[in-house]
Image (cartoon, rainbow, N blue to C red; front, side, top):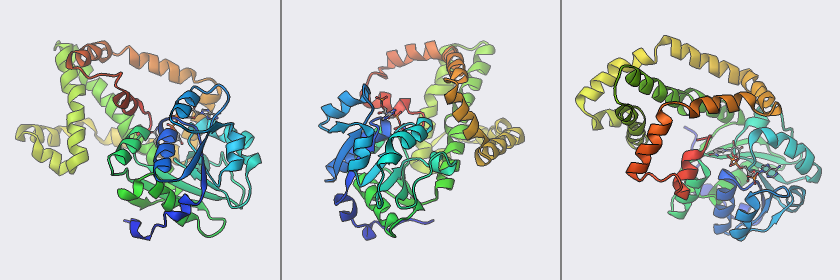
Length: 342
Ligand SMILES: NC(=O)c1ccc[n+]([C@@H]2O[C@H](COP(=O)([O-])OP(=O)(O)OC[C@H]3O[C@@H](n4cnc5c(N)ncnc54)[C@H](OP(=O)(O)O)[C@@H]3O)[C@@H](O)[C@H]2O)c1
C-alpha cells in the first residue's frame, strides 16, 4: 500500500500560499475552516445570492465572486458540485488563471472524464478526504483527522505532490492516513462504491428486506428495526472491526445465518450487475448519462426520489426515530446523514 509518511510533509508549502475555496457546502466549509485553523489564509468564492454566503460570512470568512478569488489565490479548491463545476471552471476560473497556481480537486470526476482541461502551467492535485465534510471538520476539531487519497494529474513546477501533501496536512488528514492514488482510480472506485454498495446496494437491500417482511404480514415497526435501524449497528462494527470482527461480535446464529444466506442474496446475478456498473463507469457512459440528466433538469432523479420517499419505511421510520429521540434537526447529525457522497 502506498502510504505517505507524514514526517516528510512540509507545512510551510501551504502556510505560505493563499487558498481560495470555491463553494462553501459540505466539503468547502470543512476545508476552509480546517485550513484557517492550521494557519492558512483563506477566502471563499461564491456566486451572487448564494445561500452559503451568510454561513461563510458568519464564520468570519471574506466572501468574493469566484473570478476574484481565482485571481487572488495561489491554490484554488474546487468545492462545488461535480457536474456544474465544468461550466463554473470554464466561465469563471479559467480566465483568471495564471502560471504556477494549483487547482485542488476533492473528487476526480471532471479530470477523469475530460470535462475540465486545465492549462499546462498549473498544478492539478487531488486531495480527497474519505468522508463527508462535517466529519472532516469534526475529526479535526477533536484533534484527529480523516484519511485522504492523494493524486497528481499535472505537475507544472515539480512540487505538485509536496504541495498536495502539505494541503492534506492543512485539512488535518495527515494526522490519519494519506494514500497514493490517481484521478482515474479515485473517480472510478468512488463512483463504484457509492453505486454498488454504499448508496445503491445497501438502501436497496434495506427496502427489499423490509418489503419482504411486511408483505409476509409482520409489523412494519418490527421490519423497520430489523432491516434499517440495525443496519447502523452492523456497519459501525464493520467500520471498527472489519468483517471477521463484526462476525465475532454478533451471535453465533447470526454469524452462521449471515455467512450461509449472504451469497444467496448477493449471488452471481448481483455480481454480474456490479461488473456492469463498473463497465459503465470505466467507459464513461455513466458520466455522460449523469451530465445529460443534469442538463435536462434532473427529471429522472426527481421521479426516483419521489418513489423512494413514498416507500413504506419512510413514515414508520420517522415515527420511530421521533420516539427514540434521533433528532434529524441536530445540525451535525443532519449534515452527516444527508451527504450523497460518502
Ligand atoms: N459531500 C461529500 O461528502 C463529498 C465527499 C467527497 C468528495 N466530495 C466532492 O466535493 C466536491 C464538492 O461537493 P459538496 O458535496 O461539498 O458540494 P455541496 O455540499 O453541494 O456544496 C456546493 C457548494 O458550492 C456552491 N455553489 C454552487 N454553485 C456555485 C457557483 N456557480 N459558484 C460558486 N459556488 C457555487 C454552493 O452554494 P449554495 O449552496 O449557496 O448554492 C455550495 O456552497 C465535489 O467534487 C464532490 O464530489 C464530496
